[in-house]
Image (cartoon, rainbow, N blue to C red; front, side, top):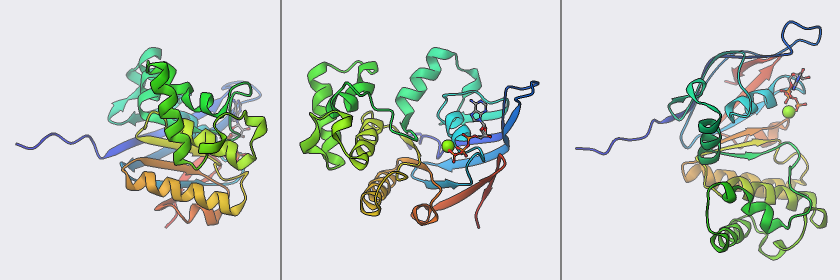
Length: 232
Ligand SMILES: Nc1ncnc2c1ncn2[C@@H]1O[C@H](COP(=O)(O)OP(=O)(O)OP(=O)(O)O)[C@@H](O)[C@H]1O
Ligand SMILES: [Mg+2]
């Protein structure tokens, strides 16, 4: 007998749509009928002009928002069947986020910022700090762990945000413009980090405006006016 394998497709959407402020004058159709299938160990880039719906899609994939239409299965689970608590647990266990802008807490040190998500996972404090230090080491920031975000460069802040996203070893990493604020050398370092994660069977979804950055991914999707197409 063979051990059952987890499903190879970790992200699957069917006709996913999002309308903001429906039925009002401010209505925006941000996402239209998006069909997407992304597997374990895939490294995928999503490109597209400003306002085309990239962050909207990322928020849905990350279960931070709910679709107006269509279906989303995350690691085999139809997320529309989950209540608030189950959704929070799914986010915690499956998904690491690197947001557009870094979303670091200004009063906390780099180490404390990285350890943050572990609080919810109920890890003892000493173990939290050890894991956080390990994650900072992995992004090359061992020596800066006691500094606050305002005392770090943009690239260093971005690496803290990535270490934080990785602290729970989530199978899915969502990164919205993670290299946007970085010089090209730091950007390259972050891209190699993503490739290493991909090789360790994480699924990496990277949103970027930059074609050179996207070229590092195994597949590229382009978003236009809320529609998503794979670039041949
Ligand atoms: N919370 C919201 N309420 C209303 N409209 C929104 C909201 N968030 C985004 N939109 C609109 O939805 C559309 C898609 O926005 P989205 O943030 O997904 O674009 P994007 O592709 O990420 O753009 P950028 O490259 O500038 O980050 C835009 O027209 C935007 O103004
Ligand atoms: Mg965006």
